[in-house]
Image (cartoon, rainbow, N blue to C red; front, side, top):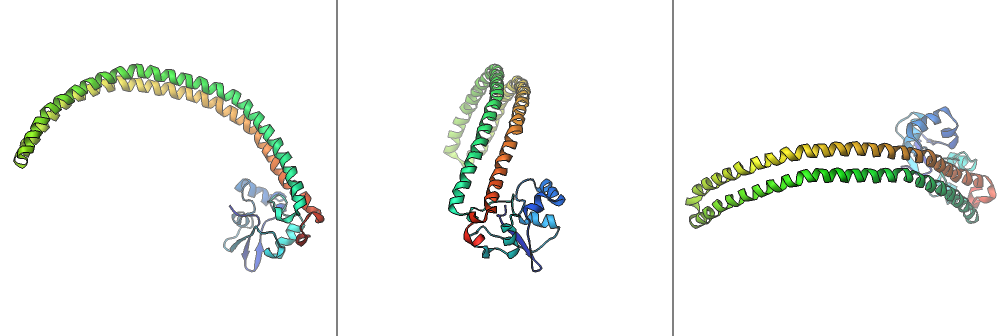
Length: 277
């Protein structure tokens, strides 16, 4: 994101945007629709507005002296043409900055009061909906586990017995193999494969039986979950939309106050630091 103030130098010219360009022209309204409300005086916005490419990007946030900026931008700042694009507290005297901050605190307090109020109201709608969703979700999970757990316990019991038989065959064969190692490897592998086949012959049908019970139960659980979550999301979105409908204009009002109060104060020359009068 570019800084306030940004400009592009091209062909010996200083190209930049003013608040009048952005907020009071047809092209400026198109820019707002194109870029939203962010970076309206940035390098990309400047190129889009004037429809050109190339040039050297420049920006400066040091307002301690007008010498840091091209003359055209200095004139635009002093005449108030940058209103709405940004603020620079370095333009105002310390006393006036204090006054400005008091105005901001009051405006922000008003916004926060509205935001918290509407948030609390929307939470009154959302929270019971979530509580009901969570209650139904847990109930569905319990129902699923009542089916799945006994099936898994039965499968695990069979699987463990099969594994014990497998290891009972394998361990003596492995102990024998360790004694004679290489010469016995072929024999060991043959016994191991046979034992593995016997194990899988018992384990795989047990697993298939478990999955036959578990999968429909899980599918039913997921179906219930999707349904109740969709209902919760419907209520949540409605509450969120209600919140945004009130919060966004309140925040926009605060942002407008932030800009308006600053530039109204700056418009009075005695409020500016000496170098900017």
